[in-house]
Image (cartoon, rainbow, N blue to C red):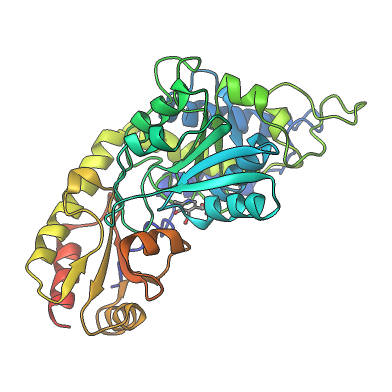
Length: 382
Ligand SMILES: Cc1ncc(COP(=O)(O)O)c(C=O)c1O
């Protein structure tokens, strides 16, 4: 039996409840939200998903939860939609390319000035770095909640609070924390320090690949221009996108099956409780980190404190390159990991593991102690 330790890339399987929902939908008719009377059903599915995700992220108004193809599209929509000519933008030294590439594109095209905030080699970041880097023309701060390479949790609430003191808009990449780390958009949307929260459906949220979206606060939704526009089935007489949410940011036919998978899986997460999921994953990570400390050949690149990271652990094994270790673990023990740069050259430069990369282990709430011990035993045999 294979041991799956690649949850940071994608969830290996949908839950039984989600599969049952999708089966029911696929065996029925496929309708298009807002395009005809029957399409009300697709709209109802979307509303159900907006409510579930809204509850998870602490967003009171479900119409502030928008769907897209995932975190990458959401981050692009938010970055391109909010950045203006001459703006200064801040981001961090652990970003995924989903953030780094659109920012770098805007910088190369002469639209923005860009600074990467320096993180410590383990991926941690001092919030004061944000205050020191803010300039008169700083408009945006874009941050990963937790590095997909190092697992280290970034103190985003503190950083975003500082940003808001200076009127800087905030975008959170919650691809690695949605559904696995409790956090909310806070008290009321008006006072929230989170202006945009981008989420991926296919990781901690346990939904289909190609699903995801973003939650948006009142201020950002007024400021954000459409990066993608098209038909919405509403205000069809106009060549402009409707002003109202969710249509303002949901052009084209939506991925109803993906959105249904999100509704069903997030409802399941809410039933279990994110705190419970976090505790299970923290326990797996703690066991793994404790075991790794006893293995002389292995260097852990992120934090060794399981309270300060999500369930993502990157290592370097002395005498081996990363790809070789992943290959041996799979061939000899059926252990599935991911090696290389994990779409985040910035994080590897921060950790000092560029260009060779690391072997990344990542766990889910169903990972067992026996699986962790088997991985440790396999590593001890290298
Ligand atoms: C930190 C981070 N941001 C963004 C993404 C992209 O997410 P999606 O696959 O939903 O586009 C990933 C996926 O690997 C990620 O780990």
